[in-house]
Length: 361
Image 1: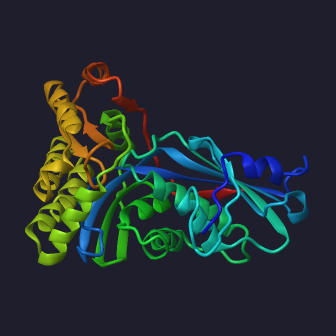
Image 2: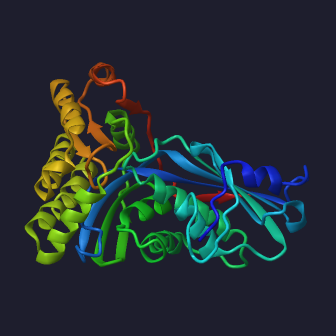
Image 3: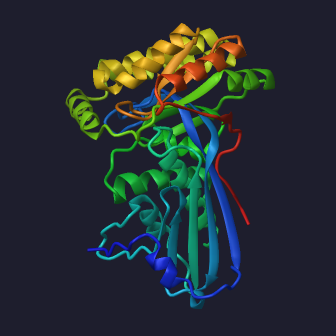
C-alpha cells in the first residue's frame, strides 16, 4: 500500500535548500457553468450534445523545477485549498491523498535529473459541480507537458485528463468538463461517438458577451457535491435502456436551443433552455434537484430570473447557474436574499473566460 504522509511531513524533511528553481512553469484553466445537455457526454449515452460556458475563477498550477539534488523527494505536492503538502509515494499503484493529481503526474512522468514542487489553487469552492477537478487536471497536465521535449495539443490534453479519470482511477466521467477547461469560451460540443467529439466555439458580438456576463450568477449551495449513490442508480437504469432512453433525448435537446438563443442574443430563450434542462435532470431522478437547489430556484423566480440550471450531474450540494433579467438592481437583491436565506449559500463572482488552458514560463 502507498504510504500516506501527514500534511507537511514530506515537505519539512524533503526540501533541503533555498536554491532558486531552475524553471517556474505557470498554467491556468477555467471552470464550467450552465452545462445544458450534461449526462449525454458519457459512455452510457454513447452520443450527445452539450452547451457549456467557461468562466473564471480559474484553476492555477505552478511548477517549481529544481535539480534533483535540491530535495530528498523528487515530487512534492502543495494542495493549497486543502492546506496539504506531501510527497506522493506511487507504491503498488495505490493512490494517496489526491489520486487525480498523483495519477496525472504518474501518467506524464518527471524527467531524469530534476525534482518538482507542484502548487495548486482555485478560488472555486471544492465540490461545486463546476468541473473544478477537470480544470485542475488540465492545468496540471499542461504544466507537466512543458517538461517534455514534445508538446501536446489542447484537445490531446483534454482527452488525456478524461482518460486519467476513467482508465487510471476508474471513475464515472464525461468529456465536456475537460474540453471546456482546455478550450475556454462558450462551446457547443457534439459527441458523435464516445469519447470522440467536435467542439465548436460560439462567437458572440462583444455586447452580447458583456450582457451574458452581467446576467449570469453562480450560486454555491455551501456543501461539496456528493451524490454517488444516486448517480450510480441513474447510470444503472440508463445502461439497461441504452442511448435511446427518452431521458437522454430530453437532455440532448437542450443544447441546440441554448446555442441558437445565445447567437441571437435571446436571453429569454436561453433561460427557457436552462429550465428545460433542469426539468430533464429531475426526470432522471428527483434527488438530482436537491431541496437547497429548489429553494434557490424559488427565490430566483421571485426576483424575475429567466433561467436556472443545476450544475453538473445534480444531487446534494454543488451549485446552480442563474440567468437574471434586465435590471442589475434585481440581480443584486436576488444575491442578498439568497445569502440571507442560508448562511451556507454563497454567490461566487464569475467572469466569462475567453481563454482555455494557458501555459507560460
